[in-house]
Amino acid sequence: MLAYVILAILSYAFSEYKEIAFLGYVERYEGTVTLVCYMLILFYAMHVIRKESSVKLILNVFTVACMILGIWGICQFFGIRLDALPEWLYIPASVREVATITAKQATDAVTLFFSNQNYTSFFMVFPICLFGMCCIAAEDMKKKVGYAALTGLMMFCLWQAASLGGMVGLAAAVLVALLLAGAENIKKWGKSLG
Image (cartoon, rainbow, N blue to C red; front, side, top):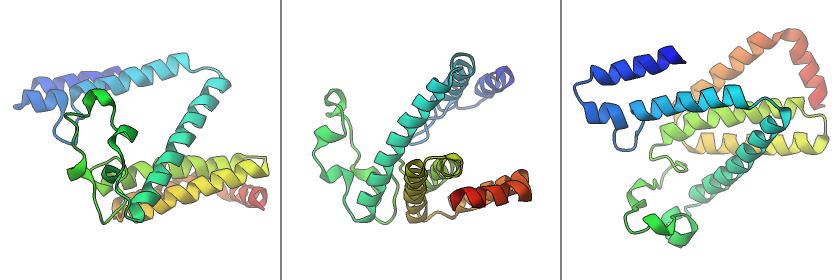
């Protein structure tokens, strides 16, 4: 992690465009500040999240967030634009005067809160893999069905994002998982789903 932070700072130090390197650029605010903050979050998570209950809390919050994103994706698929809803539902009062999201809403693909459907499709790979594995690992049938439904919802959003990159990423993730799991574990997983 320290090496990553040092390289990010060196990248900023040697950049011709200091402001962009420091903060990022329009719709991609992932400059040095953001990268260093990612490492701080990772450091915090590695040293603070030690209990299974903490991991379950994070998983539950992420699950609820993905359900909301999935519903948002369905709304976008049916042409319900976020900016057509009352602003108080999605923009805090403190920034309502300066916030403009109209230009960011695509009409031909599911983009969720991203301005580009490629970002959406690459984001979807993680929840699909996570919820797919939770579905396989869950012992309770209700949880299996719930995780399977979430996996399906995330796959719907991935497909409707209409970006090949995320689909290739998902295919690669599945291939690597199958190679790492081995034939015996795959047979066990098949039995656990049935």
